[in-house]
Image (cartoon, rainbow, N blue to C red; front, side, top):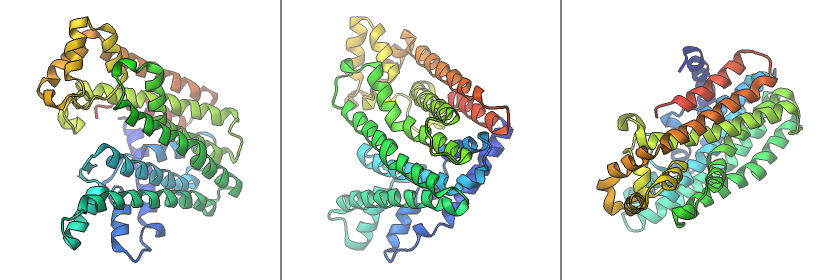
Amino acid sequence: MDKGLQSALMSVVNDINSYIDNCEYFDKYSIKEISQGLRAYFSRGGKRIRPAIAMWSCGICGGDPKKVIPAASGLEACHTWTLIHDDIIDNDDTRRGGPSVHVIGKTQAEKSWGKKDSEKYGETYSILIGDMLQGISVSMILDSVKAGVDPKVAIEICKLLESDTALNLIEGELLDVQFEYMDIKSINPDLIYKMIWGKTGVLIKYAAVMGAMIGLNTIDMNNEKVKALGDFAINIGLAFQLRDDVLGLIADEKKLGKPVGSDIVEGKKTLTAFYALETFSESEKEEFLSIFGNPQKAGYTGRAVELIKQTGAIEKTSQKAENLTHEAIEKLSVFPDNEYKSYLSGLAEYMLMREK
């Protein structure tokens, strides 16, 4: 990552972390375990990509990015509650190098009341912590009025989060869950893009649109600059996920933080897998599908990865991600050159080229 971009991103991280660390909504409860759950993921770091997009979208529109800090912190809280619930759905026991919130809850129950029903308590605790963060996210966005945001704009971006954005996000999550039950041969690129858009793209778009609306002091989402930044974010959100899918097959395991090919063991319906299936011979397809989504054949994952590599599917997916990124950067042409334009275009390129 370019040093200038890295410095700018670190500044965002510090602003957001400081705001969240001092936010009253996290610590005003008589049940001490609530604060532990609410703060768990925030205390472990995070890239704060979405707040950065929000703040820089404000800046590229001529606004003061500092005005966006409360709303951007609310956006990070929103992203975090989706992670908490996602960890329950996917039965993931770790997040950012520590226990998932449902595991934290389970441990609390075991210490206080013994092991009986501790897993049930952990899941219930995690759901409720996520629900609380969802409410906190709205409160933080409304608090942007205290930072000088027009109340009409604050209300409009809240409405946008709680209607279009949240609903599309949850639909994307449900579609991803449904993918687990669907035959991969019934999946097509349009359906994959729809799932990616919901799970990943919609919140990134919201970040850009929110920042632009604050920067322009407008509630008009059809404004040329608001739309340009929204389109920019859609493309980088899709490219981000496609890069993620490629990294799952070719990355250094130490950097990736999970075994290469684990998506194959889990049976994830990715664009790369779709492209490979289109190219396989019948015998290769039969061999791949016998491994795909079959934990009992986890030892053959390397062979499945080799089969995919031979088809050129990885290169095809990477090219799609590259095209989306170039199209995203082109959307910024309506803005004059300034530091925030360079940050956004640099971030798009970094997200495409990252190795973890």
